[in-house]
Amino acid sequence: MKRRMEPDQRRAAILGTAGEEFSRRPFSAVSVADLAAAAGVSAPLIVFYFGSKKQLYLEVVRQAADAIAAGLRDVPGPASLERLETSVEFYAAFAQRNRAGFLTLLRGSQDEGQPEVRAIVEELRDTVLSQILADVAAAGVGIDPETPDTAMAVRSYLGYVDTAVTHWLSLPPPEQEQITAARIAQLAVGAFTGSLGVLSAARPPDSPVPAGPADS
Image (tube, rainbow, N blue to C red; front, side):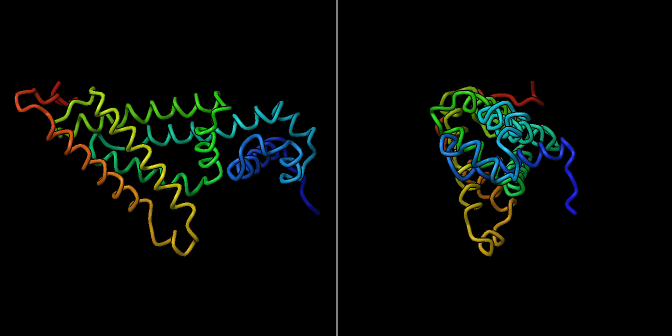
């Protein structure tokens, strides 16, 4: 006999199923009836737990964003390029373990019709941006982390990481298994340090090298 789920278990199961559905299709293409059928519950039960399809969607996105932000805050070690690489490794590993939530987060960030989701994603990106700039400043690579071209390089780096991780998740399992989260981190940070080298070379010879946190 199938054991009846406790309310918290049922709610978590619906969240997990919703993540799977929203990761495959845009918000507008998924109905409450679709979610109910996939979760094996009634449509009114979804409304009972979450209020609406939109609120359920936002909770899936917020849950993923909060988990990523918390995991990045917990990456050990002082600000450095080594910490940056460890952060990317965590990010990729999180995406692999939480594929549905991660892909729902990225899909929502590209949906012009979902300003609340885009705001959640931008908040996360601002957090990540600040941490990356701290790592760059501490690395002493001879660039100013406050300049527009540095900000552009960091934003481009975030896009590189998202693209690499999304491609990795799309690979057939035998191919995906040949690439580790650590390898993605090595490739991403290698590409980023190349950009930092260009910025450092473009710095006027007589301009002061910005001090890292340890030097201030």
